[in-house]
Length: 179
Image (cartoon, rainbow, N blue to C red; front, side, top):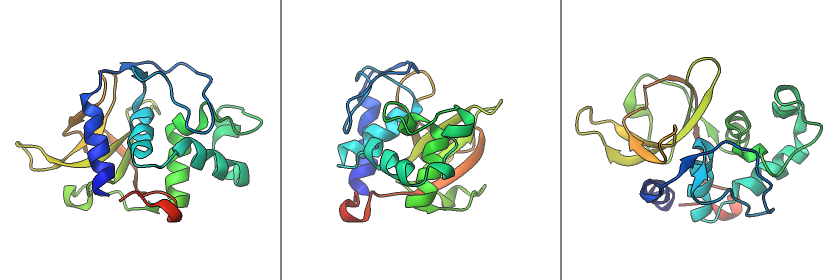
């Protein structure tokens, strides 16, 4: 977990323009250009830095469990797509609940630990995702969240900034847990 959290915090040193365009990616190990991305790309990059390829992990799970994912109904896909599926927050929510721990949503800051993944609804059914890190807010004492909501990756005190829709803990596949 320590290396994963450190990788998420390290992401805040990068300049990233918020670009949500569909991009053809190599597989496995594909990524959008390093200076672009969305909220999910910061999560993907943190895991990749510790040897977990969410593109591959999500794709393989979707191949076996297509009906459990919203891609067919929400985006009208006929089959999994290695270019985009892992970049969609609703897909990551299903993946983390299937392959990690789905934790209770709470209004107690102490229930959220470094390395936890949190998802939100920004309003109007717009999903967002971030990772709890081991840095604390001077004002509230809460752990900060590394996320990208348009100004690049930042660590901010936004845990309760929007309606929380998911709380997960995932350290990688059993054979390569990212500690």
